[in-house]
Image (cartoon, rainbow, N blue to C red):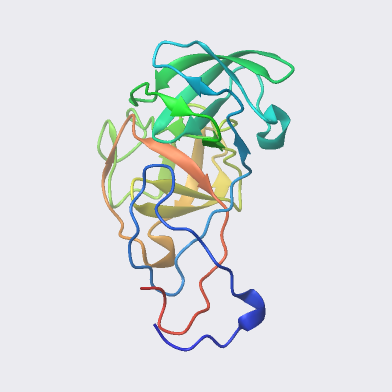
Length: 202
C-alpha cells in the first residue's frame, strides 16, 4: 500500500466480518456503514424462534423487516421490548447457532424482478438501462441512490414514469463490472464514499 496522505480520514478496521473474507480493494471502492447491535442471549439454537437483542431500535427493526447474524438472514415477526420473534434461515441462508455478543446488522434487500420489462425476459441484461424490483421500499430505492446487484454497483437516476417498481439506472459504477443478473437475486442499498489511501488497500 502507498503512504497515507489523509491521516484525519484514517480508520482502523477488523476485516472479514459476518462470514465474509478479506480481499484487496482499489481506490474508489464503495464503503457501506451499517447500523449495528448485538445478540444479548447467552446463545440461540438452530430451532429457536426468538432472540434478545441489546437494542432492536438501534438498527431500525420493525415487524416485517430482516436482519443478519453471521451468515444467516432472519425475518422479524414480532417485537416486545428487547425480545424479537423471528423466522429463521431467510433469503436462501441456513439457520445456525449464534453465541452471545454476535454482531447484528439490518438487512435491507429486495429482489430483482424484471419479468418481461427488460431486453431479456427474466434477466437484467448487461445492455439494460432500466431495472425492476419486487419491493423498492425495503431496499430504499429512489432517485439518487446506489444499489448492489451481485458484484455490480448501480446508480438509480429516476423512477419510471409509467412502469411501477421500475427505475432508470447507470451501470457499473465505481469500476464494478456490468453483468447479466437473473430475476430473484438480491438488490441491496449502498451508501457511497471512497477510499482515498494512495495505492488502495492490500
